[in-house]
Image (tube, rainbow over all chains, first blue to last red; front, side):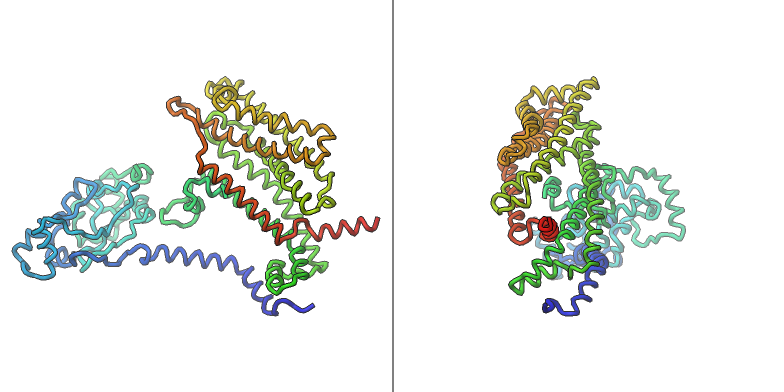
Length: 216
Length: 325
């Protein structure tokens, strides 16, 4: 009886069957890599905004403190986005005719908020609170990255649960003295873990891995 | 299908598996639902393999007798190069033996783990140690009833009476009698231990089953699963095809009722009276149910259309033995 398949079928079938474990693992890896990539998470991808606000200029060059605009970070769960009035505290005096700032002036004139695109956002089932983090020695730049180097604004981290757990499970690796929380130039010292352990005790950081801490 | 549907959010069913995820957590290994994932996946894999390996010689027959190129190629790929040589047959018999030996204890383990979904909970009517053997026996009981319900029409309409004989059907009836009695023992022990325990909630759960708003489902259950199948002790009934068919349908209904009684009747009135309520299936529930039966029948008929209903290679052996006599 004539053969149905060519001789190469022997090789192909052996490769695909014995290799199926590797093929599946490789496919799994591809899915894992793509789903964690910045294509899916938008990490380090500058987001379009109505006004091209530069943290690099305002924070890095001018030295404006985070709290000047993000006013409620020490009291509230939400850090706050500045009203147009905050922008106008300076821009009513400087760069008053710059075309790049026209949307700001229009917003002030027409009493309509600037519609900023949210860069760092968590789903509603996560009850994140800024004030507790700031009070216990988590710096702004620890989570939000080097804002003073961003000419446009992007997310420095995925904000996925596994990323949050990275610190919640080992806070001693990330905690800094409270006086440096709003510093953009603070760098973790060589003895971070040792210092961190001391701070965790001193600041009474606990219950970080209880589900209801974040998922009230 | 229902292992996926009963998850509530079936599109997130993959969350039950331990894979490196963005949550940085493993599934809750203390939960019977996660044990289920492993037990049912194992059982499904082994069953699928056993089914496929068993089909290989027959797929080869279909490949050899194929009248179109497409059929030749498709059956050929599935037959995986079967030549019918002595070596192939030896390996086939060994593999079948191993898979059968593996699948049998898996029946026990998978139904035991499924029973843990109930037994490991604290709900009155669920939290009892009789559940693992009760579920295994119930599964075998239900399985044989389903096989009878399907094989009787199939043998009639496809002319397979010489292959699925009266002796087969009678033996199935005897297995059903045996497992049915184990299930009956399970019902008795459930009720006995509920009252013997002295636990108010357990006692109430059983009084509620027998006299509460769902009393009809409970007594229909006893009728369908215990009372009526006892008719199979009578040889005349056991050897009449249509009466076996009717009894097997009744047992199918009884097993559905058993699951309804376990799930719904225990849940509708548990510890806190302010939470008590009535469950009435919605049209979506009925449509899902009927849809799943439709899916089953579709796949069954596709099988009958494209694959051998009875093992050709095994029949070849038996026919030869018959002719020798």
